[in-house]
Image 1 (tube, one colour):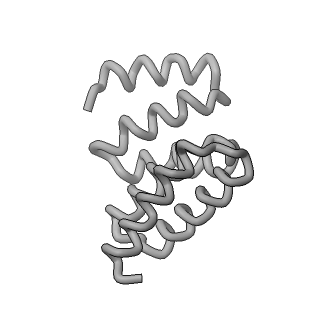
Image 2: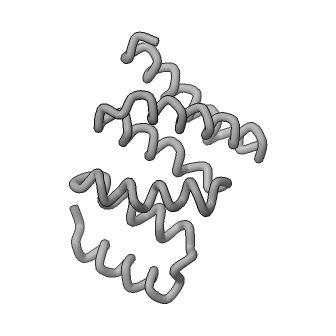
Image 3: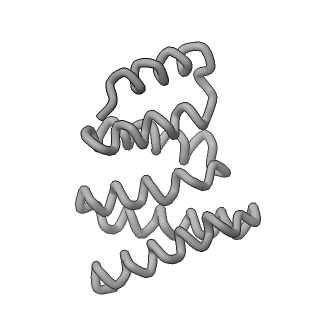
Amino acid sequence: MNLERIEKLNEFLNKEPNDPFLLYALGTEYATFDAERALVYFERLLKEFPDYTATYYHAAALYDEMGAIDRAKVVYEKGIEKCQQVNEAHTLRELQSAYQNFLFENDF
């Protein structure tokens, strides 16, 4: 947890409230110690910036950690579909790998 970094990101977000990178950065910072708050940022990204593909990996992993297995599965699947649509090969490979591990670990 880096409160100074979070404070700075919030300052930037106040100036640029619709910057998906800032929302993503705050989500990943909060994910280390406040999952509920992190999900606020990730859910906003998924809703308002669905093409910001990096979100899907972190949101799905966080849902998995929180025991929201069905929601994690949906987010992984939507992320894979979105990466295919926008031709985001690197993120697609990461999501597919994480999804396969997720399926194995959760006996799907």
